[in-house]
Amino acid sequence: MKVTALNLAWALSRAAKVRRFHAGLADPEAVQGRWLTRFLRDNAQTAYGRAHRYAAVTSVRQFRSQVPVTNYEALAPWITRIEDGEREVLTREPVLVLERTSGSVAGPKHVPYTAGLLADFGEATGPWLDDLSRAFPSLLTARQYWSLSPVAREPEVTRGGVRIGLEDDTEYFDGATRFAMKRLFAVDGAVAKSRDLESWRAKTLEQLVAAEDLGFISVWNPSFLTLLMDALLHAWPTFAATLPPKRVAAIEARVKRAGAFVGEAVWPKLRVISCWTDAWAAQALPGLRRYFPTTPFEGKGLLATEGVVSFPLWAQRAPVAAVTSHFLEFESLEDGLVSGVHELRKGATYAPLLTTRGGFARYRLADVVRCVGFYGRAPLLQFEGRLDRGSDLRGEKLNAAFVEAAVRAVLVEHPATFALVAPELGEPPRYVVYVEGAKQPGHLAADLEQRLCETLHYRYARDLGQLGPLQAQVVERGEARFLVEQQRRGVRLGDIKPSGFDPRPGWGNVFASGS
Image 1 (cartoon, one colour):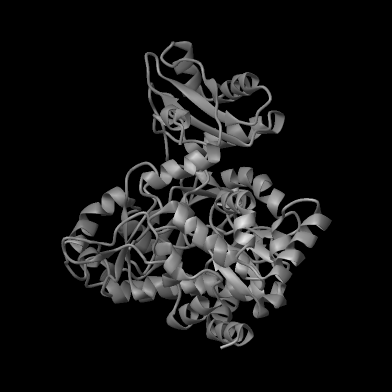
Image 2: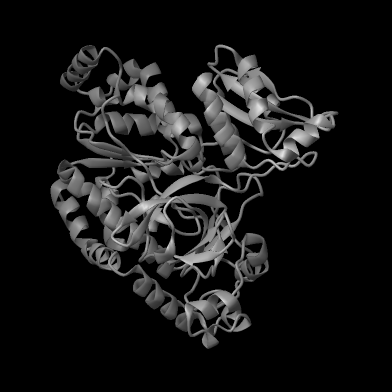
């Protein structure tokens, strides 16, 4: 089947999702109410539904008063029952797989995935991809690259026989979409089964450079693609030898016209790159822009392992709330009040609460979003950062959102290609900013220390001598070593989130190593 026909068939398969979403923009309150009613009815006789009296709930107000806001730690005993093979714990639907979160700090977590939850991811990805193809019609004649990183783990099942981990990102989509995607991919999905990083990189690049009709790239972390391009540039003669001489000549002619080795020279039909662009991820965009100086970037929105909060639309200034995917609530970071998706205030910041067909009810994500406007009656949500990944060595109470905002502000005056703040144990302990590319790292550290001291708890710990002064440590190949270390800790390479703060000590040894 030709690329154009596949893309058209795929577009038709998502038409119903697109219609539902655009109809929901006119009255998100009604759409959300119907979603919640169906969820409560379907799951009233589950163990969790009986414990929280789902069958008695008749309104959103009653749902909020009767069902508590929760987090993973509170749900862990219920998930253990699922791991042991028990059925109908959180959902009447059977659990297909337990997807593992990145486990960036607190260790891995298992999120139950049902057919209904996967379908509800599609309620967001369908309108997103439809909007993208309308903004860039030539995508209908192009192939695609979706982040396929080495799995970094052996296949696993729980003691109760439940599979752990999706095989690849296409499992988020329905059957028709998966059929189209796998035939439109520029890189064979089998590449992701590689457990050797160098082999994976070589196979990925060999297939990518062969795809002259590549039109769309979707990755998570911008640095993931930057490092791929670094490797391609470094070994270009090797990869060029696998191509027809006519194609090599055309690429090198375009490189000469551009005055640099750029992605547009390798893939002249490339139209858009989808990746994280908000909060700390923005710091990685200049590095990616060096390789793709003219290709537009589109941000991802807020899609978590547990569910989807928002997705991008090309003409909108920020991602729009996924009003047809889950039941969405938003807890104000100013006064703690909880609002429905139709009640958000422009300019206010919130932590999202998700109720999903995976069985999580009123689950608090440790993410911060700001309402920056509306599309129809649905809010546009700008991702601001994370509330978790806190560090409290001596009562300083630092969290990732605050530290990363402070680092971003300091980098305006002291540009750097890499910066990561992490604790260093000792007596007294201190924080270190591992930095690469800064002209005056000592001044950068001094200015960052001043910003951290704007918080009462950090300043108090410093004044008492409980914390030593923040110091700068110059590193080499910082981003590459950060990604390799995260992968060593079990995170899939393509899933590693951009970060300027990590509360785990020991990064000095990582950056000092010769790897």
